[in-house]
Image 1 (cartoon, rainbow, N blue to C red):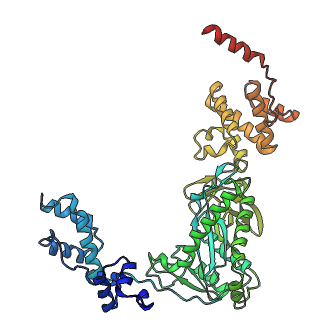
Image 2 (cartoon, one colour):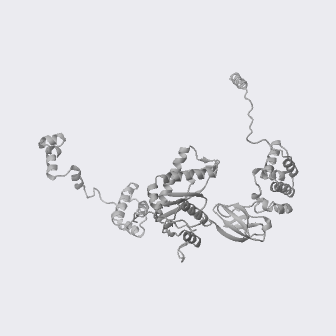
Image 3 (cartoon, rainbow, N blue to C red):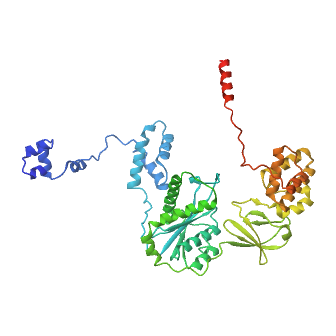
Length: 486
């Protein structure tokens, strides 16, 4: 058509295009391209008979009742019902037929409606597991989660390391994010966390603790529908991109091991700052519309009032913790935070204890009960929390060795005296004394350990390694010996 417009004859134009004159004249007269004519000529008839036409009403009946049935499942059903009629090679044909039915006659599919986000209106948060990134602390696997917060308009984000989807982690993570943000949006949306959202049928939409947190900051609470993570789409997408960014940053760093938890926290904080640096324009739009923060933050803890049992223990969230035996029978207040708990008696702070992860676990501090264990050594061997009373592996070795040379009762008495020495003097000094005895090949006893601790005698530091000088002549002798053998 271009050549004809330049004044070329039909014969010249068709020859230059490598086309027959008749074909060229046809395309000129119809004013259509060859591809358009091919589309019009596309056949709508079958080249072979439909092998499933007789059984198709049975298939559609199944699909109308259970639209989720897979084509392969139905095909195998037909093979069982009609042995020998359908071969495995016809599966692909059957799958195409099912696909066509779903597209033309099947049930309507769920429609996702893109939302328009407005500045300063909505934030979302959720927890995401980080195990797939294989981060380690001092060489040990660091199994953890990230509480992840995002503003849906600007995608400004913040996060905090945590270890469970508890209310304490939710409260601390949300409040930290708002403090960094420097203001409060109109609403906050989560998925159906059991710590925040009540079960269906409950008159109150949110739990009292979560509603109290929202009210303190003047936030309107929102939740997604059951089994609809797409409704929390912004935070779900940020999970994916954030973890990919962490993975890339770890690759650039050269390794995935951190010397301490603090170093890892700083690494994540710097990454969040880097990600947010490219969102400043939209973030500034949001900042102008955020409401001011309240005068103070809420304590990110749950409070429990419990009575210390006769075993000098308390039970918090299905886990057992020991407290000092002097508190037996007394009522104490426990403030449970995301990573630790505080024990208060009256208005007096008693101690802080690391929080256990999971359930049906125990954390027994031998210092709390050692005085009475020494008085009742017979209770040690079958004590329910026996394994908690070995501060290091050398304490465990000492007890096992004492049992080899003494009766069980005598071994328990000797070991408990060693444990008492660790409680009253210094656990590290006692551990060093045990290491010294093992290095010298001497037997373990309470008196010997006490003597070494009193004298201040210490074993050679583990880091002091002596490497003897290598005599290269010995290799020559080895080679000579090998030649003689050959």
